[in-house]
Amino acid sequence: MNRLTTSGAGYDLARFPEDPRDPFRAWDAADEYLLRHLEGIDGAKPVDLSGSVVVVGDRWGALSTVLAGHRPVQITDSYLAQRATAANLERNGADADAVRLLSVRDTPPERVDVLIVRVPKSLALLEDQLYRLAPAVHPGTVVIGTGMVKEIHTSTLKLFERILGPTRTSLAVKKARLIHCTPDQAPVRTPSPWPHRYELPDDVGAVAGRTVTNHAGIFCAERLDIGTRFFLKHLPVRGGPERVVDLGCGNGVLGLSAALANPEAEVTFIDESYQAVASAEATFRANADAGAQARFVVGDGMAGTEPASVDLVLNNPPFHSHQATTDATARNMFHAARAALRQGGELWVVGNRHLGYHTQLRRTFGNCTTVAGDPKFVVLRAVKR
Image (cartoon, rainbow, N blue to C red):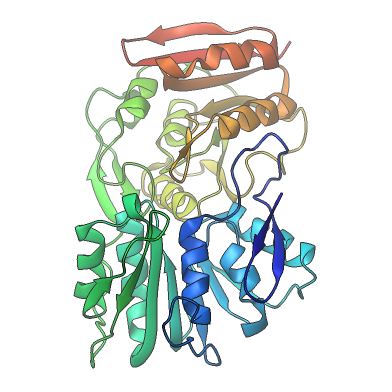
């Protein structure tokens, strides 16, 4: 936990789930720059926050917690960001309902007077959210984006300008910038170009030739990523009634492949991204056999899964948290999978060879077998003894 200090107060903030080993803070220089600008500390006139305030993409709830007195609406694709926001509000003595928590799948507010955008890593997610919010923006809306210099590109500014109106950036401060956008008189009301759909290649087993639905913001939304493609060629061949989990499901092609290969399986798709779970459900509904059983869960990994209740977990873990490289997510996924598996249950993982997941799996499970590998990727199998 760390303390964010503003001109008016200090705030104890943490990411979620809170981990004493986590070296990363719940905010960065981009958040600080934005908050100073809102207060007028950088020489500009303080921003009037008496109207409808919407905060998009607040990564760990730092912005929403500081602005809680203005009762903002937070819009995020991240379940973990929502949990972090709720925990940080409680930690700092704010009412639980001081911030209205919406996902990117929810209907946005009808009117926005101040729109704050924490620029996401995914340009597609930014595009989709600007399209969805454009009808609520009016000529008097104050639109401010924030991000680190490495996160703000010409393409970022062009999106704001094309969808909302004329856009400029600030000078860089501590490697962070602000984006200032002046909405046009007639907000854009055309629909978002998302979701995107594509057909899977012919060499990926049970899902070959199937059409995948990808909502904005999920990893490799316009094509099948090469790690998943390699994994699909080496998935286990199983039969009979069993419970399978596609952990960190993305668009759900791993779980769909398991369901098509074994019609008796019950597959649960889990991701912390609302867009990912929506993509997985759309992909499954369009391709699964009649009567196929599936559950779709937005959550903190397998935290809500009954212990010793799962036969097989399929996992392509992320190794980035926003811009930071970390194995914390994979490590948590491996531990949660072991707790959820029955005796003899198996965790199958694909990852970049250099990440060395075999070491963590041996530490967690006491065993690890290499199923397949190429110069870039490796498929690993661990069994709960």
